[in-house]
Image (cartoon, helix red, strand yellow):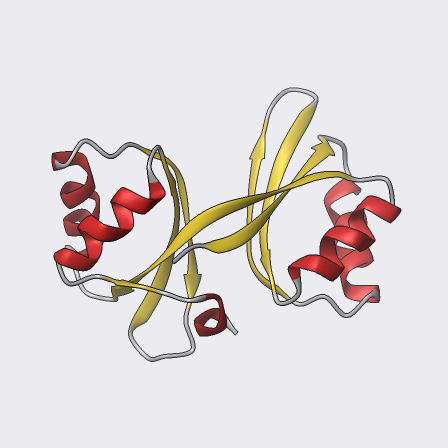
Length: 141
């Protein structure tokens, strides 16, 4: 099962990220996770929100360029070696992680690793077979 991530193309200038956050805040869109990757002039802001449809509608009405991407949210116990184990499982099976970031869950001692791979369906099957839980969107709320 995948979750929806919004990627926003944003100018790499002071205040632009604050403007994006303000637009979402004013419209009562709650951020669950954010990742910022920069390049010289532009960056990509990846966000997980509580209401994807409304967020994208609002962002597009405010003239932001954005896309929706399916990603996996993998539940990982907060213990030494668990992340290394998850990554090793995927690498051994030929799954490439294109990018990854984390959300701290409301459950004690659990984090959710947000990952985009070269084959999310295969990655999910492999991880579940190894005992990892793939989170549904409601698990992040």
